[in-house]
Length: 176
Length: 119
Image (cartoon, rainbow over all chains, first blue to last red; front, side, top):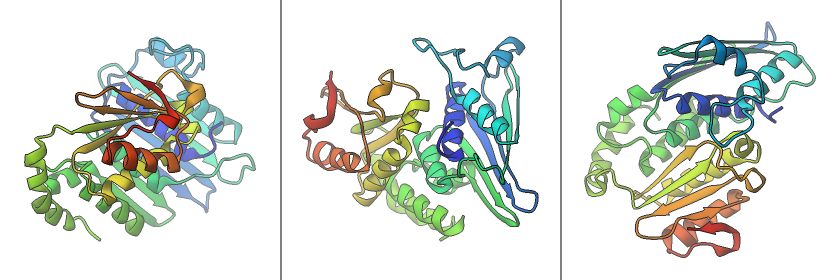
């Protein structure tokens, strides 16, 4: 189990990037009335066939050369299911992959959500060629960050330019 | 702070972009596979980004990659500089990340103390 839900998110997004996704949408929704945290990740990567989709939850299965284990998906599934939540993965070759994991906020073994601000920053800047849409909803408060919109404002200035990094750190801190 | 402020950055940064022509002098790659994340790679990457922003290092780019194959030495950071050997740093933390920026990236002296490989 990872020490934070945010760490699972970084790991799952790395799979999307490896699958050549150019667009990844990420919803993190916290509902304290229903005691549910939902993580929804959808990408437009190469996707998986039915056989691979079944195997991907096995920690001893990986598509990467030189590796013996692929822990990202099984760890997330394990955390969700052992803390009273649910896990669903669906994928289609040529169209992408979608993961929805829910967590019971009252479960004593649920790891903390973790630092979502830093997680958003490093995913956006560390993968400058991938577009992201983050939606973080905490009860009625909602924060959306769409890198396509940011890149439109920036013209040709890359999203990993030092001035943009400094802007993003402040922007996420102030608005999320 | 709102997205309109990005237009000011656009005007100011356009010159840097023309100079750089999308070719960074130094490329820093952080291993963000499962073991790297569990070992604290996110904080290392965040520190590198903060330092690059704070020091306005317009010719340095940071990206992330998956497992690098040295799980026991995670978090791993690679520094690529044109015409110079690749330096792989291991067991990185926030303090070490700051030293890599100051000593290696800014002053040109790789930090041999925690360099695992120079290739």
